Amino acid sequence: MASATVLSHERALGAVWSKTLRDQRRTLLWWAAGILLVVLMYAAFYPSVKSNADQFTTYMKNLPKAVKDMVGGTNIASPAGYLNSEIFSFMGPILLLVYAIGAGARAIAGEEESGTLDLLLSTPVRRRTVVRDKFVAMLVGAFALGALAWLGTVAVAPAFGLHVAIANLTAAFLNLFLVGLAFGTIALAAGAATGSKTLAIGVAAGSALVTFLLKTFAAAVSWLEPYRILSPFYYYTGHDPLRNGFHALDPIVLAGISVVAIVIALVTFEGRDLAT
Amino acid sequence: MAPGAVVAARDLTKTYGRTRGVVELDFEVEPGEVFGYLGPNGAGKTTTIRTMLDFISPTSGQIEVFGLDSRSDSVEIHRRVGYLPGELALYERMTGTEYLAHFAALRGGVDESFVAELVERLALDTSVRIRSLSHGNRQKVGLVQAFMHRPELLVLDEPTQGLDPLVQQTFYEMVSEVRGEGRSVFLSSHVMPEVERLCDRAAIIREGRLVAIEDIGDLKTRSVKTIDLHFQGPAPVEAFATLPGVEISESTRDAIRLRVQGSVDPVIKTAARYEVLDIESHEPSLEDVFLAFYGKGEDV
Image 1 (tube, one colour):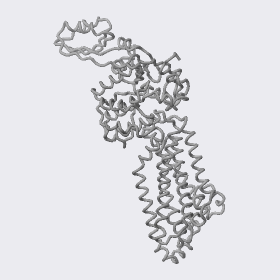
Image 2 (image 1 turned 135 degrees about the vertical axis):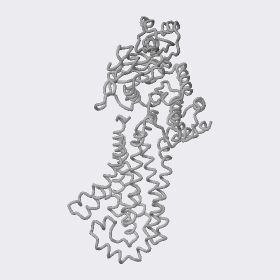
Image 3 (image 1 turned 60 degrees about the horizontal axis):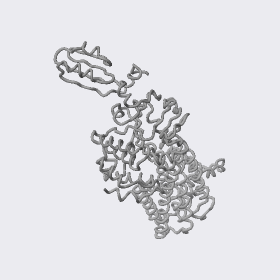
Image 4 (image 1 turned 90 degrees about the horizontal axis):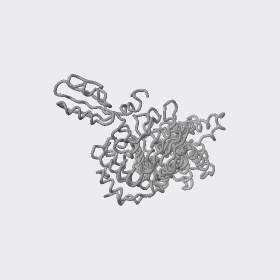
């Protein structure tokens, strides 16, 4: 029988995370292709944007400050400004967040809603091991997407005149990965605590939207400004890693959000009743 | 608990919100026995099983498996238990082989030749993706998964749902073998004949409460069967009316419906004196079983 050879090649250690990653392999490939396409496309547009720089700059100058900040600053003719406005202000985080929030919501709540969690937890695998393995799978997936986007940019961007120091690109993509992971882990935690996938997606996407708007408007509304430090997005691009490089506080805070969320997931999931 | 009880429920109560779960359950499953857990749908069978496996925690009381607490020792319990859920949900995108390999890995490896043997006995095609399997074939995957590590205790929630009669037969043999090896089975069912056939003892649960724990022999003698007799000519109602343990529940011009407790022998002997066109015996329903215990079916 065919299964005889298969049974021994997987072992309990890592069985859950390797399965979770394997389940995602097709999805991840599509995300990877999408992200590479986005990077390539924007890089390819840069030369024509640069040649129309004057018009763009005039146009941008007339925009309200909040809008300017939302699209990543005024100087979109410079390589850093262009990448900020095209990739890091919107498309990048959208892609990373949608992937990570989806993976995080499916991790526990998805399995619970589909009923497969019962049999998984009937094996001698601890609940906290399942949470940990699902988290690791999501982390690996988000990291792979971030790393691929970084690689694509590093490899392709200079060919179109987008010259940004690799160290600065690395710092920016590290923050991108970490902000995606943070909201993915929030989704995982909300799902682990409640068993509801819809709620998990709602909590993570809702908090992402609110904190994104907070960060954006804090730049323009003076009484809001002190509160910008409450937004993960402030740590994501607030110190402009593409221009200023690595800023240690940012990745620490962003990773800290994931750490807090994963602890909440571990604690709440441990003793709670599973849904039928 | 008595030394060596495989499962022991002590005053086990689980309530969720406003819906009833189970109330003050007390029972023990002895080593080497097949213990039936009989009750209508919604009686609390699945709730009991889910506390046993620590999917849910008792509101009060406790349940022990192998003398281990369901809450604090769940991992050790899981190691030694094989479980088939009542509502089986499998990973749809895996093939049978991949699924079994995954669960073998989660259990730290199992005897592959035994898995192969189970797959062959149940005539399961493991090369197909689970999403394209019929309900009966999914149930087979669930059964292999539950039996494959030769657990000391099998917890089976309505195991024969969707199995065709031939496979049911194989399943009955598998359960007998488990008993033969001194291992134990906790089998929930809402079908009396299945419990009669497989179990040594059975607990009867209704609306969250245990109403009886009986040896199967006693259950059989106390349970009431329904027999329909069709006669050539007028039905001899009087001839049956006086038989011990027999009650005439309905009669028409040429047919009688009898409710028989205990042996059907007097009925057969009496019927033999007349020309019988047809005889039909109905499997005792759960209501019939409750009737035997309480003298009334509804709202016990």
